[in-house]
Length: 521
Image (cartoon, rainbow, N blue to C red; front, top):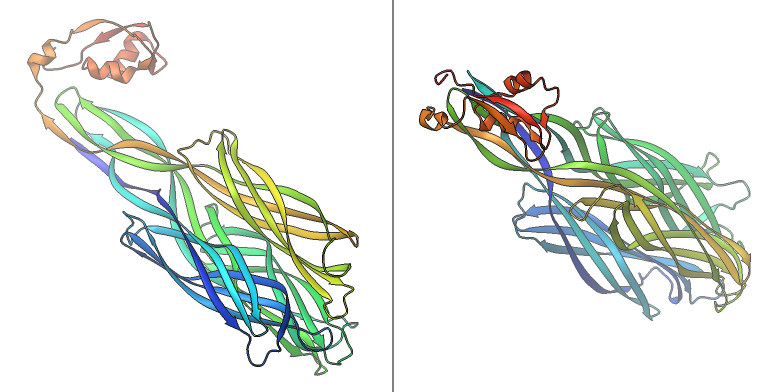
């Protein structure tokens, strides 16, 4: 007998690990910057720069970027900003991890506490969580068919979801904006924020396409001293592509896109005036591609002419349950009473999402969390006209995934599609947001494949104990295959003798069974 095999590979979730660290640093105001009088707004972001998978641990290297907007101690409504970065290197320990494993690491800034020690120094305390999702690709040689005289074979169809690639890359987005005619020329950029909205990813042949919108907000001072601080918002739609030879149209993609380094630069227009803003930002991509494959495997065999015993090996694999996107609207009214001065207008609003809890239910994943909405308002204060605050917008949402259970695995990514606020009056504001939750879920399966066999001559004394012909009464529903193998017959012979169209014997059913052994008969 000859056994034909093929390589079967499947990615399995191996481990999930988390490490939480506290970063406590001081930051001095650069000599070229004026003294601080009052902080208005703080922004922090953790960017991963290097991930090294080692045996039993993962080395993560990144940077915490901080920037702050403040009122200066100088006379008049003066604004300034400062920024800096702190290097981070951490090890995530996980027994059993190997350098060949696929690892996805996320860094979340859980809390950022900034205090003004004095007019030239800030104290920055950050709580950062690193989350690692480890997958391994297992390969095994499994039988797909056998050839030989008198060999009976049982096949089964297995649906495999294979991770074809997992890689990280970057793409650049560039754009230019010219100020409106009513706006004064730019003397100095004071503050800027860049946010990614509505990212969409498509896997194409040999490349990955990313599209979305970048929202840029900036404050600047005009060239003339009497001109107040100016603010502008700029929406930049973009389409970019990344080369990925492993990608193919029709693949299932699981791609996480997040902004990295961004540079804004003021340029002169055709008349030589400083009215053009140039932007270049780097988008970081964590890319996974999956393919679903139906594979027919040989799951059992025997022979009516020889004593053949197959050798089985366990085989674990994953099936895609669902890739789903859920959207939910969040709305909240907040009071502006108690703030310094009276609010006149909202000039900018941005936000980030914090997922507090997830719960697996029969119909999907229930998610609870908050949107941290950063507001920047103009007040009637002469010397402190800008006021910054952060408000929480609680949310809950169900991401549908039928028949998911506690043994199944999933990945969840949250993003803001829209966020804005409306002044109802000087004391109250209405905040609205739309967030999206992308989920990909897999079920874990266990099976077995035939990797070999042993062959011996038939034991005729044992075969003689099996009746040449008889009536079999099924105690429970079972495949005809089981009966044929137990009575040294064949599925085809039993079905023909009993005029059966089905391959199952029903409970209580009587069927005629005949042994098929040439040497004995």
